[in-house]
Length: 100
Image (cartoon, rainbow, N blue to C red):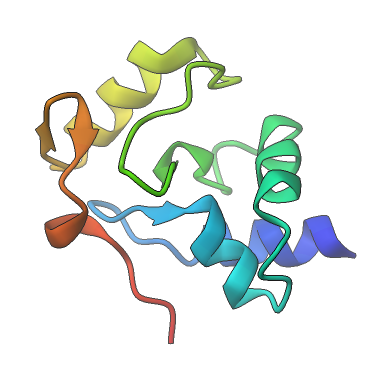
């Protein structure tokens, strides 16, 4: 059930935006479960519909263990959506998605 909530939250993130593991945990009502968000995304059953590449660390850095092609692939996917970077970190002031 927790993983389904995580997958639903991630599916809400639009192209060109990102969320952090912590903001997703908070949105689903489990603010101390950021690591579980990471585990769920590592096991993502449907990467085409659950865009886990749009989830980054709190400082905007990318996951070195991105499960679907590595850190460079995550960078490439985000850059192709118009996400901008500064010092290899997502510009969170511009691209951080705010859950309603």
